[in-house]
Image 1: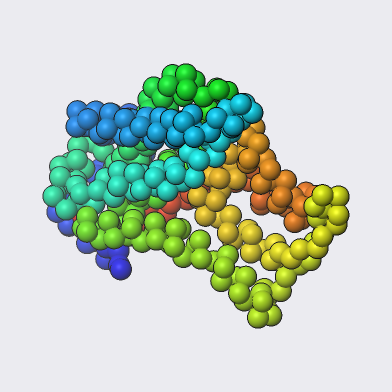
Image 2: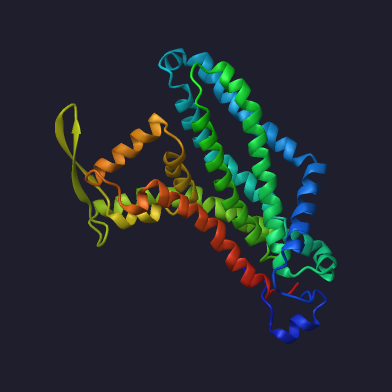
Length: 327
């Protein structure tokens, strides 16, 4: 897989897709591009389709809990279970939606040639990239807000216990998670003039995090069992029913690598914005593995920073590369 790179200043100056008069960022220009991108999505009913999809997801999980989870409802833990199940599903669904939203953002315009018309206006390449990112992020964010808001009425009516603060926390973290993947998708889209190549790259990212990355824990564990250098295990002690039991975990750096996955950071970061018992219990189990206190790279605030990393870094790389590709 290769990206389209320019061959120097002379090539870019003479190409039919020459760079716009200014390569600096104009906030008004960014806003105009983002607004048009957003309005196009509204006119195509994309926002409402996505909003209805999130609405159905939340209502479906809530209905299942209300029908099959009478014991759970009696214990007043329904919001906890809703957040736990919803986060597991949105961890997969949100990246898919974000990648689909972003993969044609710029590659589609390059493929049809409309990018040259856009850049003939007083827009720089940076304006186009940032405007597309903001527009697509707004589409995903608004659809999440609308879907969650509409579902909140049904959720509150069906569940025996409903915590609006935890529910809002799930929404906020889902938006940040979605923007991270939208940034990855739009950034990749800016590097390819073919939508086929851009789509392949986005699909590759999904496979990386949901295939390769998820398999890393098992692979690292196998290497540790075989005594491979740097993969040896660490022994720790924890309590079960008042009795001390010894367990083994991998080296600290392994957990740092695993937590770089946006999906893992999303799941861990939920403990920052929710007080869900199931999530807090998982945090407590992790703390026991590290002697009672998690290392900084596994704490909830750092997981939030990892998501911000995936928002900022891809677009910074794309801003640099998009200035130099041959349109």
